[in-house]
Length: 108
Image (cartoon, rainbow, N blue to C red; front, top):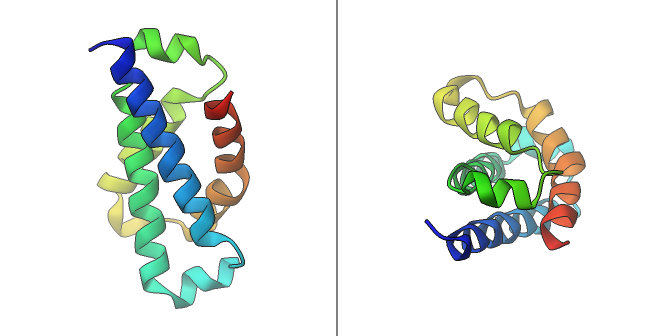
């Protein structure tokens, strides 16, 4: 894998993060309880962000040391393997609080 591949993966992370933020724009936490499609979309988008992060090489990760790589990949694993126990409060908090910060770090 090359640094170019890392750039592509980080661009995927940025694109899917932005898509997630657009999806929740104007929404509130209660929407997750009433909109199953929104819930499924958010879970899937966060999974994709984590999968892209898992494919960034160590060298690529070192180029952006302020990104919490391990936590992002761990969340992806928890969502996939714990599909039957997703805490929607935590999911919402991640989307609303952590993703804007991730976008900022990926853009820099």
